Length: 424
Image (cartoon, rainbow, N blue to C red):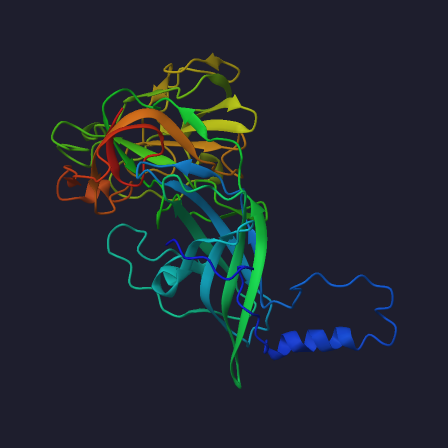
């Protein structure tokens, strides 16, 4: 989201009259409650109004520093139209403000807004990695009674303070039969996390690795909205898939239909922090590459895996391991760098890789996915095309098109961005 200049002293535009007829009907109903119905009642808070959209933040926004040197805050705004199904509205702009200073720290409008918002049940266009997404339709029109998710990825410049509380200003127009009726609303004052992200060692052995499906943008991890046990969550928000890369930039060589052709296959997975093993799953067979397997049962999503509790409410997940190679059992205490198992292709995996993330629960479903950083690594380059688990083995060759990155060089206590090639 692009940085914006501050608004006026209050951080809000003057509210306009003219909400949709449904909203006015609700107001009229309240006004007709009868004489004396408001006697002795406290005055309404300034700015109280009927709003056509409701909004809820799905996680505690947590800042983390990435390889671009900026502080990122990635979270979601779940919005619901309170209008009748026959009354659409046009969402023109979403501003994120520092609730204390009323400075705008991020803004979405036009095409960027269209690409960062979608109805909760719609698939993600262009996320298959095979073809670029077609331009999302503008303006962004939300049908009455629909629920949409707005994917917010703030990027604050180096040295820019992180707001202690964020608020969200939505503006647009209700599309009534008599014409557009403008609205503005300020919603969801949300504190940001005060606890620093976990700073971890590498989850893999030293060498060159490709970080795929990392934050931020239209990836399956970042935008993986999951309805589990009656609630929406984003359980893989900041997960990273790791692929071993050879001296010639190759992720596989030979026959991509053979597991052994992938350099990641049977590479050791190591503990990125010390802790206690709280869950181990073994016995799930590897999938034959490179064709996407059927979606497995929910319990087998991450295949053979190890989960380690490293702090209160913080768990490290190491997924898609090879059956029979896990070196630990539940209850074991592990040290940083200890081998946990070998990379395989089990679970919801098409080509061998390590799925790694921080979780807030010992279980993958349901969980949340807070940020983390790595103590030290060196960025070697960037892969521009979206090459990921499902299309890696379908490339003409196994050599990744690695280009120079503006962030090449050593990094400490930072999070690798999507499709960076780095050295641990």
